[in-house]
Length: 239
Image (cartoon, rainbow, N blue to C red; front, side, top):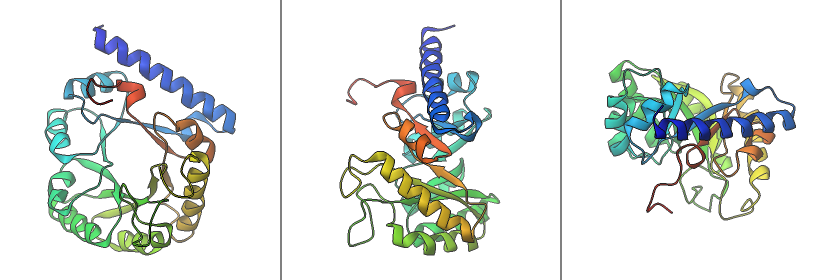
């Protein structure tokens, strides 16, 4: 085993222990929570090692990095998640590799994704990104739509050809009433998920929690956690 593979195996085992312990504490089954490894800034060689170690879900937030990496790893049994703010001019490229886009936050993006999914003959899973720090514009600092916009955007996705409404995603906000209150933020997301599922029962995916707050996300009921640093480490120069 190479040094890098051994390192990633150790890190994965530690994250697995954290998720398992969080599930036990919350009275949940371990299989209720899916780990997505966020591989942004890391090379395709790391993605290949992660696949060998049993990882099946990876995430990227920049198309210019993700597209060549996904192409290089196209023979691996992976589902690629796009988790960054997505510009409409990148949609065609993202539809080429992403099975799920977790950052749906405006109607124009839904229209563009639907058009490209139909053109490519693909079905793309979509999560509405909820901004719990939304200002008067209804938008969050790191993208996302305010809670008041979830229902309308969900209906739009559900009706769009080539798209599948899978659920909701959030990032614990750094400002606003939920700043520093990660579990409260994730519990609010779960309430919104309950509301969404009344009209769309299959939209039961809840993506929340990262390296620093995955326990709070699992406690709140998240179905997917997005972990980067705790698995891959901190790259020099990235802080």
